[in-house]
Length: 334
Ligand SMILES: *Cc1c(COP(=O)(O)O)cnc(C)c1O
Image (cartoon, rainbow, N blue to C red):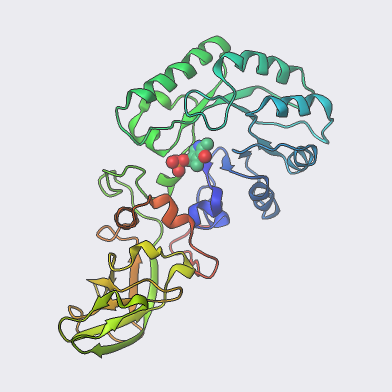
């Protein structure tokens, strides 16, 4: 089950759905994302990980043959009272095995399954889903505890399990069971803060690129950008690249990140603006206006490294890319 929520982690939901068409199913978070995939012709089973809470949303899910995850008793009650245009298929009950985010408590699962089995709005068997809170911490005993809850339920009910996100796919083989549910790793990015994608054999799908829109020289003492947070201590050639926080390039990368120009790494200097960043070109002497600027997506300039510099996770950097950023599919077979 390939997770393509949040516009496939910023990569483009339709592009990702086509590239991942051999998946047995897709998962998104919200109804709107599922409807969008259907309107674009995606025919796979589509799970809505957040579920839905109103009669109208259940009806829409039914009309578009989407599969909202059941994680609340009130959702089961709603299904007992209404009659959907078509029964929901490919159903999943989310179990709270320890994360305490969404899910029915393990001791209430059998009752919930009984009620769902009686509902004419549910067709076929209901699988059991759960989510790990700490699967990115390899060897953390809390993962085994969550897994034990789910294996016990599988033993009691003989239903299929769907547990593993990317980190568990990579590090927790016992969690694989009948279905896996990776997101981030499909895009070639590591879910671990202490292991790079390259170390895991992953290859970044996304290369984020822009161009230099100006190149000129600064004198000693010249300050760069809002707040003048960078001052030239030697004569400096500066380049201005067309990307900023208005594109999703984090302002927390101000004065910290690097980019690649003509194969050479060059530091981002001064604050990130809405539309631009400034770059120290003293070691890229040939650089000129119009040159490509690689912002992330190579083995030596991975989004994981930039996430560490920005004190966040790569999930955030890739998902917040804005509509203004052009997405071009290269080597895509679709
Ligand atoms: C986002 C999400 C996933 C995918 O997680 P990754 O860490 O990106 O692999 C799986 N399951 C649920 C419930 C999610 O919300």
